[in-house]
Length: 243
Image (cartoon, rainbow, N blue to C red; front, top):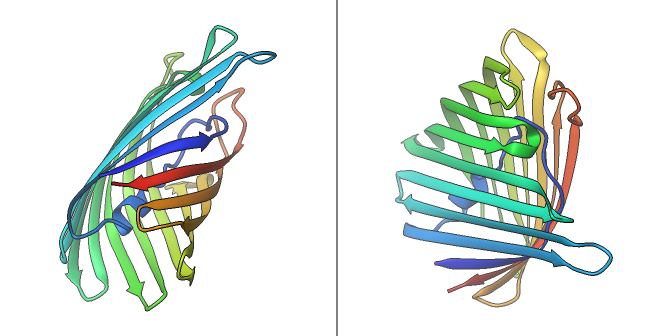
């Protein structure tokens, strides 16, 4: 079991955000493992602010397949008014076909009051090609997915998207690892309607049980809802304790 206490987290995301859950499946040990992450950002004085988040993940992994279940929630207030409230869930199944080729399918649902998103549900399936070396590993995945978004103002959209990603992990030093993930999700029939995500992280292994990751995430939506910005950035550092 892992427990993580978040030290610093910033900002909200645009509607229809891409969430990178791939490292949880990639770095899981054989057998069953679970991870719990809790965060708190509390400020008093000139700025009255509180931000709490909780996430959990469970992974069942064998030589041939991986099953991943992730759930999270966030609640925040500033000056007595709520500015963050969201829920997220993701289920992914990956099955080895042959050699370096996997098949994978996924289901996802999320909501966020402050992105005006009442519910976003999606399902998809595709293929993943992976490579693993002595100090580095990489994977390229591509899938077709359908999504249904319902906004707080009553608006609703349905679309089919082509979701592709590229991941790279490099062990630069025995105690220092660099990783990056890039997603792109254009809408079928209208490729100018696309969502992208780039996330890079540097993780220092302080000891066998203690890790310090620092990550930068940039997401972009070419056609967000009205009054929602196209681009979001998040810088995060956390203290991960392996129990």
